[in-house]
Image (cartoon, rainbow, N blue to C red; front, side, top):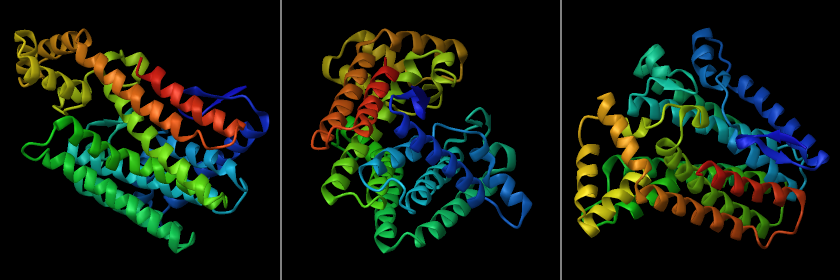
Length: 336
């Protein structure tokens, strides 16, 4: 039994483990090859986040989903490279929008080279992903284009905020469905589709990926508040300090508006203050960790994870299905 992929997913079948490990190794080689340029500076910038590592969550899902068809089909590894390149490209752009200084434990591209280089490097990665995608056929191009449209729409909706009268929590969950769920869903879809799996299986795995992707992000929201840096690998309260309204904060505001409790209103006012001040930031974290809103966010995470588990019900029992179910358990564990 060996740990592979994010969260130390345990694969108990040697054949499955070998397939997944070989597939992820091939994806890593593909990422390095796809990010090479005749211009050394472009190679350096494009490989900056590739070499910084990462969970490779999306390629892992491609590999597991491919187990439901011909797991050695030639389009599987390239499609996994496509989804990871797309994900990496969005990180370059996100860091510019968020003015992030660090990504995956290293200086962000925008910090190192400036916003223009970071944006253009993200564009370069999108271009390379499109080049690979063109060899996978028109259906793959269409699937990726639709997912990318959803991803960008989610980002725009997040930037614009909810319209008047729209429930902020519902708006946020829609944003996550676009920003995160869409590409995770495509990861599962590509794995199944490229392996030649039955259309019903492709649809089941796509639904699973969509729900798991949202749960994965919600778990990160909880971690940002609840964890210490050792658990999460990043500084606690990063989103809080940057004023990003993640689910625990939205649940707090919802409760404050509904119940009108003085302590809830006071905490909302604290969150609206300057949290670059370390003392205020520490106090906000302390209060949120003890607040019912955090537990509500955990329950939301569990609900999406349970939906992902339920989506897998039509699939035959096999080691790949077991591994996908274990990913659901890992997300729940991640959220505490």
